[in-house]
Length: 309
Image (cartoon, rainbow, N blue to C red; front, side, top):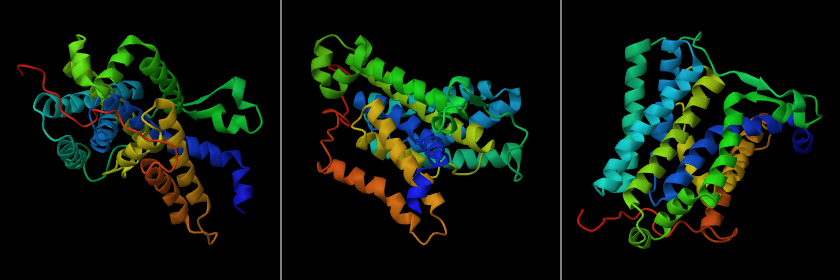
């Protein structure tokens, strides 16, 4: 039964779709943690992005303006997070959890206040699906990559751009240097705070894009707590992916596969919960050093105080 399902391209298409709202915040978390800031506020930023994407799309009747507006809101929330954790030196975990709770309450309140208990209008413009003619007619590959929501293609492009940016540009080198040894980076003339602000804000914008995919890509609506813990799953995917864009995508695909397979196995007598547990077990093994080495940036989560500040 399972082998028959594995041979169906629909399962792998669903895997890619399920992985997208995990891969985007995982990508954002990579930027943040590579600069030395642990950002568990990705869950809340996803909710902010999901809600404001629908709101701006509804007000402007343009889903692309909804996407841009959501990313701006994600940047604003991330700037607030960065100010508390970088400038003030507050505990990054506590501030992140506070933002998650704040985002859950704010979006639920605004949903009822603006749209009422009926929820967001179904006629709100959604992000379009895109068919790629050069892939669409290829057997097996076509059903997986030939037609997906536009956000899926954006995610794949961003993974490539992020990898090139982090590992093949001077600014990417500075981000990694600040995450490994902020004192040495400061001595070399790098503004540690500015780089960390950049990493956190980039992370917030990418996390909000994950929320946009949920609201304007999958459901065309906003629901309370619709991120359903994907921000935390993204954190696990980023760790399992060893704090790299390509690794985070690979881990996100593993989580997406587990979700897609668990839906396929419903009613077959095989426990879907066991399938969904597998990626988390692999993440624990990775952290324990049993599945390769998974070492965080040396200064990850450690506040830095420049002299005189």
